[in-house]
Length: 171
Image (cartoon, rainbow, N blue to C red):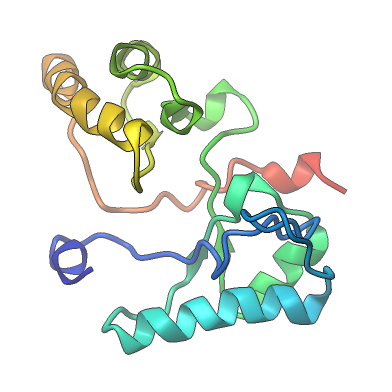
């Protein structure tokens, strides 16, 4: 994390247990009772741990699986967190989903990303464990090469409109 911070990257909140904040389903298949208190604990525990590890208190969050509703977002806002999603409402949002978490090949990641990216694009990619991460890593050089060819550069800045207006689509 220190390396990411030194590079000017924003550290955001993705929840503690990586559960679906709208249904309570955890990655191991168990269910939590969804409540404002549970969502608050998921986000606050993560905030506290990141701060204890030396990061500034997060101001951004992305719910696991993109699962958000107005109640989840209201709780996050009360904690000072702004929603940032990995996909947009439409193409004008200029958010490029690499689909890397879906188990696609490195070449498929390259194809979808390079085809869609343009000036101001937010390109979303994941890290973690397993082949999906390796495929993402293997795709990076070709994506950077294509960015160079198109005269694009990367930044650690987070666009103010990076929400993708997802709340317009959920109840």
